[in-house]
Length: 284
Image (cartoon, rainbow, N blue to C red; front, top):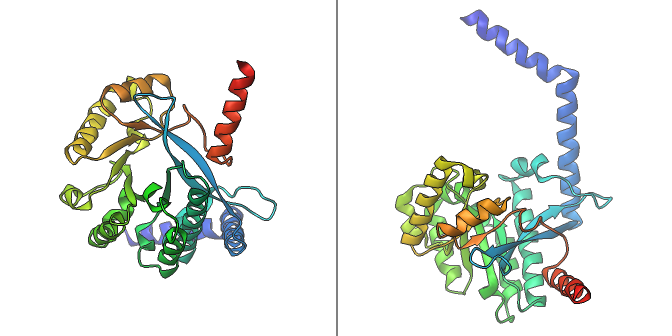
């Protein structure tokens, strides 16, 4: 048994010392270096994805602002290549701050916009984040009331008491909260009644092909029922087909989000609406 462990350890060491292992390690270092440099330059932008009403899928309820990090050439650095590494350190906090800063700026520019911005519960005690929020809402009537902060289920459950107090304070200022990726982890339901989230975003793992998947239909109905019991708005993520959209509307989901309606785009919502109106006018 001891010799097997030694052999396994040797195999792992060989992989780490192999050309492939070295190449992966080098790539990861280069990616993190690009991310650090991009954040130092504030070379980030928001992409916008609409969330539509399930009962009238031509109407947008609000948009989600998704942060994009750009390298020195303007190319988007894929989040999957760095997000796991930065989640627990200061780079993750800086990304949250820059996303909030840009979100508040566009809310102040567009009085008709309602926008959700992602944040980690780890940013709650980060001074720069709260400074950004206070600066972006001070003296700007209506901005706080049109801001939705999305916190993932996994992040919220790491420090539920802290999140509860944080939400209570900001909800008094008119800010709304959404629990993102609901159902993806192991939410302690005893905390759900204390959180008072305004909305629950049902994780896409339950939504894809739901019209053809009886198991996901049962699970999603249960999640919707929980949300309705606690008087929380529901959003289904990753909606990709008309059939799925129709089924979700039929079981009482309030809003829908996904590539069936639109991919995230760098174009500001007001610009996109103006362009759509222009095309409609030309077609008419």
